[in-house]
Image (cartoon, rainbow, N blue to C red):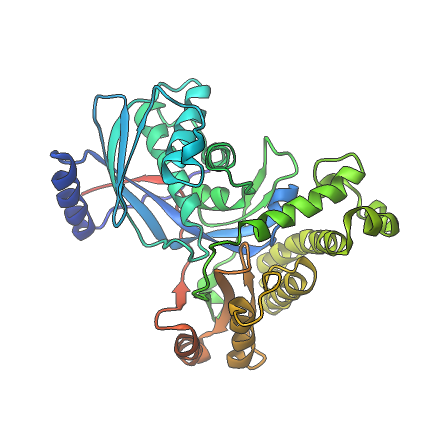
Length: 404
Protein backbone atom coordinates (compact mmCIF):
# COMPACT_ATOMS: atom_id res chain seq x y z
CA UNK A 1 0.00 0.00 0.00
CA UNK A 2 1.47 3.35 -1.05
CA UNK A 3 1.64 6.13 1.52
CA UNK A 4 2.08 9.82 0.90
CA UNK A 5 5.32 11.59 1.73
CA UNK A 6 5.89 12.65 5.34
CA UNK A 7 8.40 15.42 5.99
CA UNK A 8 10.09 15.98 9.29
CA UNK A 9 9.42 19.40 10.76
CA UNK A 10 12.62 21.51 10.55
CA UNK A 11 12.40 22.51 14.20
CA UNK A 12 11.89 18.90 15.27
CA UNK A 13 14.83 17.85 13.09
CA UNK A 14 17.03 20.46 14.74
CA UNK A 15 16.17 19.13 18.20
CA UNK A 16 16.55 15.49 17.15
CA UNK A 17 19.94 16.20 15.54
CA UNK A 18 21.26 17.98 18.61
CA UNK A 19 20.13 15.22 20.98
CA UNK A 20 21.47 12.49 18.71
CA UNK A 21 24.87 14.14 18.46
CA UNK A 22 25.09 14.70 22.21
CA UNK A 23 24.42 10.98 22.79
CA UNK A 24 26.32 9.29 19.96
CA UNK A 25 28.90 11.91 18.97
CA UNK A 26 27.83 12.16 15.32
CA UNK A 27 24.93 13.56 13.34
CA UNK A 28 22.09 11.25 12.25
CA UNK A 29 21.72 10.27 8.60
CA UNK A 30 18.04 9.34 8.30
CA UNK A 31 14.68 9.84 10.01
CA UNK A 32 11.75 7.46 10.53
CA UNK A 33 8.24 7.67 11.97
CA UNK A 34 5.48 5.27 13.02
CA UNK A 35 2.05 6.44 14.22
CA UNK A 36 -0.13 5.46 17.10
CA UNK A 37 -3.44 3.85 16.28
CA UNK A 38 -7.06 3.97 17.29
CA UNK A 39 -9.35 0.97 17.17
CA UNK A 40 -12.70 2.06 15.76
CA UNK A 41 -14.42 -1.30 15.40
CA UNK A 42 -13.59 -4.86 16.38
CA UNK A 43 -12.92 -4.84 20.11
CA UNK A 44 -10.92 -8.00 20.91
CA UNK A 45 -11.68 -9.64 17.57
CA UNK A 46 -8.16 -9.70 16.15
CA UNK A 47 -6.84 -12.48 18.38
CA UNK A 48 -9.68 -14.66 17.09
CA UNK A 49 -8.65 -13.86 13.50
CA UNK A 50 -11.73 -11.72 13.03
CA UNK A 51 -12.37 -8.32 11.47
CA UNK A 52 -11.39 -4.85 12.68
CA UNK A 53 -11.74 -1.22 11.65
CA UNK A 54 -8.77 0.88 12.70
CA UNK A 55 -6.89 4.06 11.88
CA UNK A 56 -3.47 5.61 12.30
CA UNK A 57 -3.56 8.87 14.25
CA UNK A 58 -1.58 12.11 14.21
CA UNK A 59 0.62 11.14 17.17
CA UNK A 60 3.81 9.27 16.41
CA UNK A 61 7.18 7.90 17.49
CA UNK A 62 10.07 9.46 15.55
CA UNK A 63 13.67 8.27 15.29
CA UNK A 64 16.88 9.91 14.11
CA UNK A 65 19.12 7.09 12.89
CA UNK A 66 22.67 6.33 11.79
CA UNK A 67 24.34 3.03 10.85
CA UNK A 68 27.22 2.56 13.33
CA UNK A 69 29.37 -0.14 11.69
CA UNK A 70 29.17 -2.49 14.69
CA UNK A 71 27.08 -5.49 15.76
CA UNK A 72 25.23 -3.38 18.32
CA UNK A 73 21.81 -1.75 18.02
CA UNK A 74 21.73 1.19 20.43
CA UNK A 75 18.46 3.05 20.94
CA UNK A 76 17.80 5.84 23.39
CA UNK A 77 14.21 7.01 23.77
CA UNK A 78 13.68 10.35 25.46
CA UNK A 79 13.08 9.83 29.18
CA UNK A 80 14.27 6.20 29.19
CA UNK A 81 17.59 4.37 29.63
CA UNK A 82 19.70 3.33 26.65
CA UNK A 83 18.72 -0.03 25.11
CA UNK A 84 21.49 -2.07 23.54
CA UNK A 85 21.34 -5.47 21.86
CA UNK A 86 23.92 -7.55 20.02
CA UNK A 87 22.65 -8.61 16.58
CA UNK A 88 24.75 -11.79 16.83
CA UNK A 89 22.49 -12.90 19.71
CA UNK A 90 18.95 -13.08 18.35
CA UNK A 91 17.22 -15.62 20.56
CA UNK A 92 14.66 -14.85 23.30
CA UNK A 93 16.13 -14.04 26.69
CA UNK A 94 14.25 -14.87 29.88
CA UNK A 95 15.49 -11.73 31.67
CA UNK A 96 14.21 -9.47 28.87
CA UNK A 97 10.54 -10.53 29.01
CA UNK A 98 8.27 -7.45 29.23
CA UNK A 99 11.15 -5.14 28.29
CA UNK A 100 11.96 -2.84 25.39
CA UNK A 101 15.19 -4.72 24.48
CA UNK A 102 13.00 -7.80 23.93
CA UNK A 103 10.99 -5.94 21.27
CA UNK A 104 14.15 -4.74 19.49
CA UNK A 105 15.75 -8.18 19.62
CA UNK A 106 12.54 -9.85 18.44
CA UNK A 107 12.13 -7.56 15.43
CA UNK A 108 15.78 -8.00 14.47
CA UNK A 109 15.50 -11.77 14.89
CA UNK A 110 12.52 -12.04 12.56
CA UNK A 111 14.26 -9.99 9.88
CA UNK A 112 17.29 -12.28 10.19
CA UNK A 113 15.03 -15.30 9.73
CA UNK A 114 13.74 -13.72 6.51
CA UNK A 115 17.28 -13.45 5.16
CA UNK A 116 18.11 -9.89 6.14
CA UNK A 117 21.68 -9.24 7.30
CA UNK A 118 20.86 -7.07 10.30
CA UNK A 119 23.66 -4.77 11.39
CA UNK A 120 24.20 -2.24 14.12
CA UNK A 121 22.70 1.24 14.17
CA UNK A 122 22.17 4.10 16.60
CA UNK A 123 18.80 5.76 17.11
CA UNK A 124 17.38 8.55 19.22
CA UNK A 125 13.59 8.46 19.61
CA UNK A 126 10.93 10.87 20.76
CA UNK A 127 7.24 10.04 20.98
CA UNK A 128 3.88 11.71 21.36
CA UNK A 129 2.28 8.24 21.67
CA UNK A 130 2.50 8.08 25.44
CA UNK A 131 2.64 4.67 27.16
CA UNK A 132 -0.75 3.70 28.55
CA UNK A 133 -2.54 6.19 26.29
CA UNK A 134 -4.52 3.47 24.54
CA UNK A 135 -2.99 4.47 21.21
CA UNK A 136 -0.58 1.53 21.24
CA UNK A 137 2.84 2.97 21.91
CA UNK A 138 4.36 -0.53 21.85
CA UNK A 139 3.01 -1.26 18.35
CA UNK A 140 4.27 2.11 17.08
CA UNK A 141 7.69 1.29 18.53
CA UNK A 142 7.76 -2.18 16.95
CA UNK A 143 6.70 -0.77 13.59
CA UNK A 144 9.33 1.96 13.88
CA UNK A 145 12.14 -0.55 14.55
CA UNK A 146 10.88 -2.80 11.76
CA UNK A 147 10.72 0.07 9.29
CA UNK A 148 14.25 1.20 10.21
CA UNK A 149 15.72 -2.28 9.70
CA UNK A 150 13.75 -2.81 6.50
CA UNK A 151 15.03 0.43 4.96
CA UNK A 152 18.60 0.29 6.29
CA UNK A 153 19.44 -3.34 5.63
CA UNK A 154 16.75 -4.99 3.45
CA UNK A 155 16.13 -2.51 0.61
CA UNK A 156 12.57 -1.97 1.87
CA UNK A 157 11.62 -5.44 0.59
CA UNK A 158 9.15 -6.08 3.38
CA UNK A 159 5.60 -4.73 2.94
CA UNK A 160 3.93 -2.64 5.60
CA UNK A 161 1.62 -5.55 6.44
CA UNK A 162 4.66 -7.80 6.89
CA UNK A 163 6.33 -5.22 9.14
CA UNK A 164 3.20 -5.46 11.31
CA UNK A 165 3.50 -9.25 11.47
CA UNK A 166 7.17 -8.92 12.45
CA UNK A 167 6.16 -6.58 15.28
CA UNK A 168 3.55 -9.04 16.51
CA UNK A 169 6.13 -11.85 16.41
CA UNK A 170 8.48 -9.79 18.59
CA UNK A 171 5.74 -9.03 21.09
CA UNK A 172 4.46 -12.62 21.24
CA UNK A 173 7.73 -14.57 21.23
CA UNK A 174 10.31 -12.22 22.80
CA UNK A 175 8.28 -9.75 24.90
CA UNK A 176 5.87 -12.42 26.15
CA UNK A 177 2.52 -10.79 25.43
CA UNK A 178 -0.11 -12.77 23.46
CA UNK A 179 -1.38 -9.79 21.44
CA UNK A 180 -3.34 -9.85 18.20
CA UNK A 181 -2.23 -8.11 15.01
CA UNK A 182 -4.54 -5.11 14.80
CA UNK A 183 -2.35 -2.56 16.58
CA UNK A 184 0.74 -3.21 14.50
CA UNK A 185 -1.19 -3.32 11.22
CA UNK A 186 -2.98 -0.02 11.80
CA UNK A 187 0.32 1.64 12.70
CA UNK A 188 2.28 0.10 9.83
CA UNK A 189 -0.27 0.69 7.06
CA UNK A 190 -1.74 4.07 8.03
CA UNK A 191 -4.99 5.86 7.21
CA UNK A 192 -8.41 4.28 7.87
CA UNK A 193 -8.42 0.56 7.11
CA UNK A 194 -10.51 -2.52 7.67
CA UNK A 195 -8.63 -5.76 8.21
CA UNK A 196 -9.82 -9.37 8.02
CA UNK A 197 -7.37 -11.61 9.88
CA UNK A 198 -9.00 -14.96 8.99
CA UNK A 199 -6.00 -16.01 6.89
CA UNK A 200 -3.34 -15.37 9.53
CA UNK A 201 -0.48 -15.40 7.02
CA UNK A 202 -2.23 -13.10 4.54
CA UNK A 203 -4.59 -10.69 6.32
CA UNK A 204 -6.88 -8.81 3.94
CA UNK A 205 -6.31 -5.08 4.36
CA UNK A 206 -8.63 -2.63 2.61
CA UNK A 207 -8.69 1.17 2.79
CA UNK A 208 -12.00 2.70 3.84
CA UNK A 209 -13.17 5.63 1.77
CA UNK A 210 -14.40 8.14 4.32
CA UNK A 211 -13.31 11.62 5.31
CA UNK A 212 -13.77 12.03 9.06
CA UNK A 213 -13.15 15.77 8.77
CA UNK A 214 -16.50 16.13 6.99
CA UNK A 215 -18.72 14.34 9.52
CA UNK A 216 -19.17 17.19 12.01
CA UNK A 217 -17.67 15.15 14.85
CA UNK A 218 -14.29 15.07 16.55
CA UNK A 219 -12.53 11.81 17.37
CA UNK A 220 -11.58 11.92 21.05
CA UNK A 221 -9.53 9.49 23.10
CA UNK A 222 -9.99 9.96 26.83
CA UNK A 223 -7.21 8.77 29.13
CA UNK A 224 -8.80 7.44 32.30
CA UNK A 225 -5.42 7.69 34.08
CA UNK A 226 -5.90 4.14 35.38
CA UNK A 227 -2.83 1.95 35.69
CA UNK A 228 -2.31 -1.20 33.61
CA UNK A 229 -0.10 -2.60 36.36
CA UNK A 230 -1.22 -6.00 37.69
CA UNK A 231 -3.83 -6.35 34.93
CA UNK A 232 -1.91 -8.73 32.66
CA UNK A 233 -3.96 -11.68 33.92
CA UNK A 234 -7.20 -9.82 33.16
CA UNK A 235 -6.12 -9.18 29.56
CA UNK A 236 -4.80 -12.70 29.07
CA UNK A 237 -8.03 -14.23 30.42
CA UNK A 238 -10.04 -12.97 27.45
CA UNK A 239 -8.20 -14.86 24.68
CA UNK A 240 -7.51 -17.66 27.18
CA UNK A 241 -11.16 -18.30 27.98
CA UNK A 242 -12.25 -17.94 24.36
CA UNK A 243 -9.55 -20.40 23.33
CA UNK A 244 -11.18 -23.02 25.55
CA UNK A 245 -14.41 -22.54 23.63
CA UNK A 246 -12.62 -22.96 20.30
CA UNK A 247 -10.80 -26.05 21.58
CA UNK A 248 -14.12 -27.75 22.32
CA UNK A 249 -14.74 -27.69 18.56
CA UNK A 250 -11.19 -28.78 17.77
CA UNK A 251 -10.33 -25.36 16.37
CA UNK A 252 -7.77 -22.68 17.15
CA UNK A 253 -10.01 -19.59 17.03
CA UNK A 254 -13.72 -18.72 16.96
CA UNK A 255 -13.63 -17.39 13.40
CA UNK A 256 -13.23 -21.02 12.28
CA UNK A 257 -16.49 -22.04 13.98
CA UNK A 258 -19.88 -21.21 12.40
CA UNK A 259 -22.02 -19.13 14.73
CA UNK A 260 -24.95 -21.55 14.60
CA UNK A 261 -22.70 -24.41 15.73
CA UNK A 262 -21.49 -22.32 18.66
CA UNK A 263 -25.01 -21.42 19.84
CA UNK A 264 -26.18 -25.03 19.47
CA UNK A 265 -23.39 -26.08 21.82
CA UNK A 266 -23.97 -23.42 24.51
CA UNK A 267 -25.46 -25.85 27.10
CA UNK A 268 -22.34 -28.03 26.91
CA UNK A 269 -19.98 -25.06 26.70
CA UNK A 270 -21.36 -23.63 29.95
CA UNK A 271 -20.40 -26.85 31.67
CA UNK A 272 -16.96 -27.20 30.10
CA UNK A 273 -15.80 -23.58 29.78
CA UNK A 274 -17.89 -21.54 32.19
CA UNK A 275 -20.47 -18.83 31.58
CA UNK A 276 -18.03 -15.93 31.21
CA UNK A 277 -16.19 -17.70 28.41
CA UNK A 278 -19.50 -18.31 26.61
CA UNK A 279 -20.61 -14.70 27.02
CA UNK A 280 -17.25 -13.41 25.77
CA UNK A 281 -17.59 -15.66 22.73
CA UNK A 282 -21.03 -14.17 22.05
CA UNK A 283 -19.38 -10.75 22.01
CA UNK A 284 -16.95 -11.94 19.37
CA UNK A 285 -19.66 -13.13 17.00
CA UNK A 286 -21.67 -9.92 17.39
CA UNK A 287 -18.66 -7.61 17.16
CA UNK A 288 -17.17 -9.45 14.18
CA UNK A 289 -20.45 -9.07 12.28
CA UNK A 290 -20.66 -5.40 13.25
CA UNK A 291 -17.37 -4.35 11.60
CA UNK A 292 -18.48 -4.75 7.95
CA UNK A 293 -21.68 -2.90 8.84
CA UNK A 294 -19.59 -0.01 10.20
CA UNK A 295 -17.50 0.02 7.02
CA UNK A 296 -20.63 -0.01 4.86
CA UNK A 297 -22.18 2.85 6.83
CA UNK A 298 -19.05 4.99 6.43
CA UNK A 299 -18.67 4.28 2.72
CA UNK A 300 -22.35 5.16 2.18
CA UNK A 301 -21.88 8.37 4.17
CA UNK A 302 -24.47 7.27 6.76
CA UNK A 303 -22.71 8.62 9.84
CA UNK A 304 -25.77 8.30 12.09
CA UNK A 305 -25.86 4.54 11.42
CA UNK A 306 -22.13 4.39 12.09
CA UNK A 307 -22.61 6.12 15.47
CA UNK A 308 -25.40 3.66 16.34
CA UNK A 309 -23.06 0.77 15.61
CA UNK A 310 -20.30 2.35 17.73
CA UNK A 311 -22.70 2.51 20.68
CA UNK A 312 -23.69 -1.12 20.13
CA UNK A 313 -20.01 -2.08 20.17
CA UNK A 314 -19.53 -0.28 23.47
CA UNK A 315 -22.52 -1.96 25.06
CA UNK A 316 -21.33 -5.38 23.89
CA UNK A 317 -17.84 -4.85 25.30
CA UNK A 318 -19.28 -3.74 28.64
CA UNK A 319 -21.95 -6.44 29.01
CA UNK A 320 -20.55 -9.45 27.18
CA UNK A 321 -16.79 -9.08 26.78
CA UNK A 322 -16.62 -7.62 30.31
CA UNK A 323 -13.41 -5.63 29.79
CA UNK A 324 -14.46 -2.45 31.60
CA UNK A 325 -14.17 -3.30 35.32
CA UNK A 326 -11.37 -5.63 36.49
CA UNK A 327 -12.63 -8.54 38.60
CA UNK A 328 -13.06 -7.54 42.23
CA UNK A 329 -12.50 -3.79 41.71
CA UNK A 330 -14.94 -1.69 43.76
CA UNK A 331 -13.44 1.65 44.73
CA UNK A 332 -11.55 2.17 41.45
CA UNK A 333 -13.65 1.72 38.32
CA UNK A 334 -11.96 4.33 36.17
CA UNK A 335 -13.08 3.15 32.73
CA UNK A 336 -16.67 2.65 33.88
CA UNK A 337 -16.73 6.16 35.35
CA UNK A 338 -15.27 7.65 32.15
CA UNK A 339 -17.96 5.92 30.07
CA UNK A 340 -20.66 7.23 32.40
CA UNK A 341 -19.32 10.77 32.08
CA UNK A 342 -19.17 10.46 28.29
CA UNK A 343 -22.86 9.62 28.30
CA UNK A 344 -23.54 12.54 30.62
CA UNK A 345 -21.67 15.16 28.59
CA UNK A 346 -22.81 13.90 25.18
CA UNK A 347 -26.49 14.24 26.15
CA UNK A 348 -27.67 11.62 23.68
CA UNK A 349 -25.46 12.85 20.82
CA UNK A 350 -22.37 11.26 19.25
CA UNK A 351 -21.15 7.90 20.53
CA UNK A 352 -18.69 6.42 23.02
CA UNK A 353 -17.13 3.03 23.85
CA UNK A 354 -14.30 1.33 25.69
CA UNK A 355 -11.17 1.54 23.56
CA UNK A 356 -8.57 -1.17 23.00
CA UNK A 357 -7.77 -3.77 25.62
CA UNK A 358 -10.00 -2.28 28.30
CA UNK A 359 -9.87 -2.56 32.11
CA UNK A 360 -7.62 0.53 32.24
CA UNK A 361 -6.34 2.96 29.64
CA UNK A 362 -8.81 4.82 27.47
CA UNK A 363 -12.29 5.26 26.09
CA UNK A 364 -13.21 6.62 22.68
CA UNK A 365 -15.85 9.19 21.84
CA UNK A 366 -17.19 10.79 18.68
CA UNK A 367 -18.19 14.27 19.80
CA UNK A 368 -20.19 16.83 17.77
CA UNK A 369 -18.10 19.93 17.13
CA UNK A 370 -20.72 22.21 18.71
CA UNK A 371 -20.26 20.59 22.15
CA UNK A 372 -16.61 19.58 21.81
CA UNK A 373 -15.16 22.26 24.07
CA UNK A 374 -17.73 21.63 26.80
CA UNK A 375 -17.14 17.88 26.53
CA UNK A 376 -13.36 18.24 26.66
CA UNK A 377 -13.47 20.62 29.60
CA UNK A 378 -15.86 18.39 31.52
CA UNK A 379 -13.79 15.25 31.04
CA UNK A 380 -10.58 17.06 31.99
CA UNK A 381 -12.14 18.41 35.19
CA UNK A 382 -13.03 14.88 36.29
CA UNK A 383 -10.04 12.88 35.02
CA UNK A 384 -7.31 15.52 35.05
CA UNK A 385 -6.02 18.21 32.73
CA UNK A 386 -5.15 16.84 29.29
CA UNK A 387 -7.12 13.61 29.71
CA UNK A 388 -9.21 14.27 26.59
CA UNK A 389 -7.16 14.08 23.38
CA UNK A 390 -8.71 15.42 20.16
CA UNK A 391 -7.11 13.51 17.29
CA UNK A 392 -7.08 13.29 13.52
CA UNK A 393 -6.38 10.38 11.20
CA UNK A 394 -2.91 10.19 9.64
CA UNK A 395 -2.53 9.00 6.02
CA UNK A 396 0.97 7.54 6.46
CA UNK A 397 1.89 4.38 8.31
CA UNK A 398 5.48 3.46 9.19
CA UNK A 399 7.71 5.51 6.87
CA UNK A 400 11.08 7.05 6.29
CA UNK A 401 10.66 10.80 6.65
CA UNK A 402 12.00 13.31 4.17
CA UNK A 403 14.19 16.14 5.42
CA UNK A 404 14.57 19.44 3.58
